[in-house]
Length: 253
Ligand code: ADP
Image 1 (cartoon, helix red, strand yellow):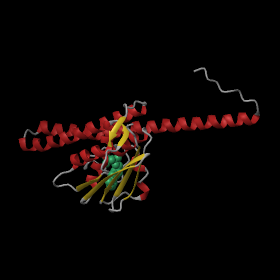
Image 2 (tube, rainbow, N blue to C red):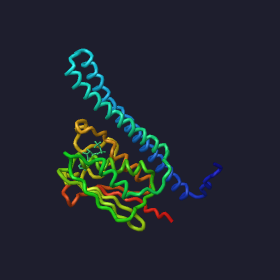
Image 3 (cartoon, rainbow, N blue to C red):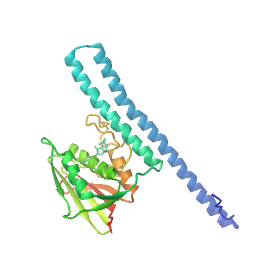
Image 4 (spheres, rainbow, N blue to C red):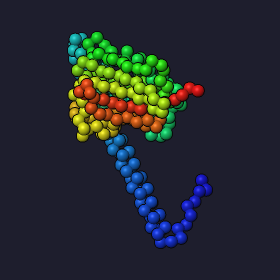
């Protein structure tokens, strides 16, 4: 408060001031457009699990056949889980948009990667191989942010891999990298930028069959960017997708 721009004293200054103001207005319009689109998309995405839960619950009420209700109720449970993941994701994004960022601390990416790999390994799923440096690798973030990144990247990899997922942690003096490779069908170049957009999906199956929300990678990008890190997707030497994340390395001294 109290800050004032100096009054322009020449035609050139006035001209450049008008230019700067126009840029500002254009940016504000873009932000408003983005917000409108996001609200509309969110409402659309929330409608589908809600409608499905309602229809199925009505079926279960009308047909008191225990076998049918069992089947229908199992679907209701799945749709409720998806709804709850959607609402959680929307809340996290809304908080972040409002500038609410949880406190950061040094987090050992090596330990977090091993724990996440264990969480997503199953007997009938792809093999998950983890390569980490022998020591610890500290990154500056909140614990749940690191888990969110790992869980979303690994869940996607499990969904798309044929048989192998590789998780690699590389520690440098400035940057600590996380690389997640899978041997699935990968992401075509034209989608690589946009998969980090909210609700963007490669195939428009709305990810219903896979239980996805379309928010996973948007959340990943959000929690990484707000710590000054980067994330991108490329083609993996294993044939599928390669997600590359970098965080600032934290020294404990
Ligand atoms: P969803 O919850 O629908 O999976 P995400 O934001 O996690 O949403 O992913 C966005 C899109 O990127 C999805 O359409 C998904 O198909 C694609 N995608 C994400 N990870 C991979 C991967 N490892 N291999 C191929 N496609 C992927």
